[in-house]
Image 1 (tube, helix red, strand yellow):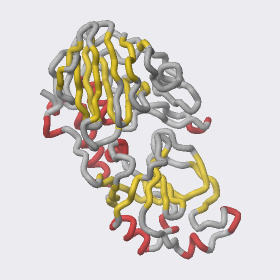
Image 2 (cartoon, one colour; image 1 turned 135 degrees about the vertical axis):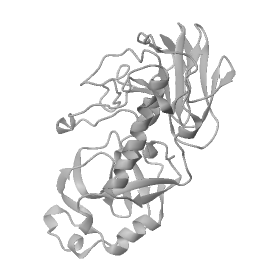
Image 3 (cartoon, one colour; image 1 turned 180 degrees about the horizontal axis):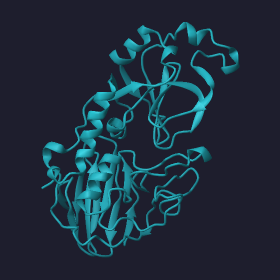
Length: 323
């Protein structure tokens, strides 16, 4: 068990996969914004890859441990202190009973950080997941962000959990500026002109400050829209980007005029704007580490390139990535 001394920012319990098969009831997936970082953290401390850890944004929490623990901190670049002694990220670290863990902002690299703890966070599952969905106050610890004074239970560590396991430096996920996020064609691509498509991939897009776990608003080039979009029936709506309400895939690029939305882990399940592109699984972690207020670029890729990205992410499950 550990106690939250300072809560940090947007600090919640999240697992990797979130809730599956519940969108037809109106619930989003939830789960880690950077599922790759939390997966790596779990592997470092001997957990199942989907185990729940602590997620925070920008500014991490301060925790005090009531028992000996094994932890790993991954995700955004920070300074990690245990009783004011600095330790490296991306490796398993022993924390002794009574010691305090501090997460100190160090740079403007990345946005979401993770604390994986051997044994995982011992909270009940809700709809098959420990992930917190604060809007409906479900999952995680009492369905809310962690607060100062909370005492959080931890599960039993696996017998093979060991101090000192680290991710090889060459495999630490690279956060670039601007971050390049791969896209694949989605539906309603014919709502765009050839000029629109060219501009989408030749421009920098800015992540707006009114972004959240439900979606990243991104502003970019002016979109003209094709004749098909401009001349469709008005029953779908008067704006060229309107369509009849349809299901939204998570991590689609949802376009509504010149300000679009990357639909993330807690996005709405359906709506009336078109989604001409989607982000493949192997590139979705990049959204989580694209900092609000900064610029990103999009890159159009093929199915073969998407498969390669997925293979790279799956490679983190192999022991040859660790030492």
